[in-house]
Image (cartoon, rainbow, N blue to C red):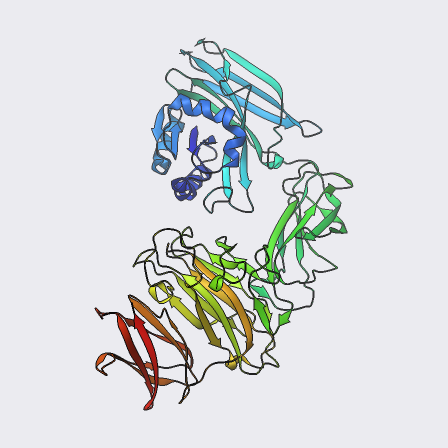
Length: 596
């Protein structure tokens, strides 16, 4: 018998789980397994449901960290250290007891009938012997992780112990041929996820030495009437760009013993109205049928969940509701707009027709330049390092646009010199099959404060920067997708406000170069010059003091047109006025800088 102590919010438990579970599954004829979900930092609904039974088992073994495990009660092991040799040795060591265990459901499936006969095959004396009976669920599936990590599949989970966690006292001394038995009717807890996954475990343990002398499993049994949805197919992946309905297909499965001849398939989008269609046919146990939803699903803008479920079998109530429902998420863009603006004034987030991917986007009350009531916020502080998060614009229609541009304000502070959070703006002309970067800022180049801020950053009115992106290359496109793509590096918060798509209004200097912003200015450590090129160019930058003395220079080849930037660093320059000169094909643009 293998007892594991684990938790849904335990990172190491998740890491060792696949290998450990695979070893147990490959030894189903030799191993009886129970998983106890402990009270441990982090949320775990399976622990909350079973604390009454788990805590005494934890106390018996003195477990003080997880993951942990016991082999036959008396051998403490780290789960990933369990080997096939250890299993074989324990299995072949023999037992002084034989055990015959079975169970059945009551007609209403609200209780189980348990029968266990245990008989002594070898004389034995025990100090504090107990007979234990436990209900487990062989497999619990969650549609989304119940804990702090990505794990959604859990196996052999303890659900209840009969009559309690302390078990039933049995006699100390047993002679060959001695036997005892129990025939119990016990209720099924209301928190059981899937009655079709119920199994019963019984074991005899001497609590003094903690040795488990025998264990048995009565495996899960099919229910009589059990129709369910095992999968949903033909739902758009990625982004669906169309106003035409799509037709999902339901994979209907008979999980029960009785042949399934009819059921009702119900479906809804989000919390919308429920639609239903009838199905008739003939499915034997384990058989499936693909059933299209005849009315289809009409797409609407945004991210949505499609829920499909059955609630009957052969005209009667389904014996098991846990496998009746399946769900799938899809993203749809069915309307395209121009011009477009968003300043996040509404408290709901994301705004209408926008959608976010990732749980670290939200709305904050800070607003650009102190005007307005809100902004979008990307929580780089709490987002995992290396994680990627998206915020999708509504669809954009540039079929009649002349020189369109995208502009937005942002505010950001680095949390340290090494936190290089990144923001990109990407454009797609093929409904998200591929994306083109039109804007990218990272770390110090994205900062609008010029300083490192290690506390939580909330921008002041002056700590915002305006960005302008030329979209002329996409003029004439009727179905354009645009998104922000944020890469987390555990830096500080990023704020975005005043998003506008309209006709371009760049201040154009000579020879196809337009300086769109210099920020910050005045500055302390560095400043960034944003400019726009109509075509690929070689750009030279020169920095002068007020005496005309050249202090810095840089020449770069920009191989693509569009928005570009050059960063100027304060290399021990004295406070005062300076001039930066941008040179393209011997034509010059001069801007004034102030170092504080």
